[in-house]
Image (cartoon, rainbow, N blue to C red; front, side):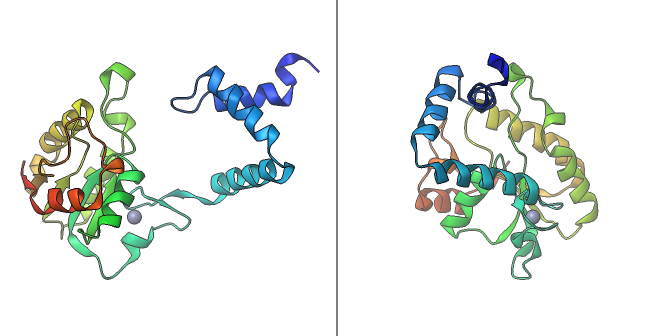
Length: 200
Ligand code: ZN
């Protein structure tokens, strides 16, 4: 067996591709997994395999789901006139937890970052534009990207791109710290920012 074929090296190599995980952290994680009882590694492997096999992105809003359409999009109780645009599924979950919003979402799966080579094509912006052409009941689009350089650039880009649709475009109010992430902000602050959203 060559060094490259050694399973632990393959595991380290694959783990090191995760965001924020370098070669050293990948090795620490792999060794940690090895030190756990054997069934932990097996459960982890199974969870990974099942996730990859069964979980996909909602055909409507790009949220994660095991069905074609996610629970939120499928619910008759949601307000169909509003779409809240978020960077990530974690942000969507944070807003849902705050219980301040009953409309639809659209998950971009990232934010514009020219430094990292992430342009509009890398985000689910085309899917949002496509949605707006068919979901004519939409009246308001809330730009809930994070209040940092990339999130602001994304909001600005979206406001220009979506302008031809002639919808009310709003941005979450301040109260969310500059440079902050929705994912890590408490529910009350999110609820206040949602209530105080302003026309963009
Ligand atoms: Zn959905």
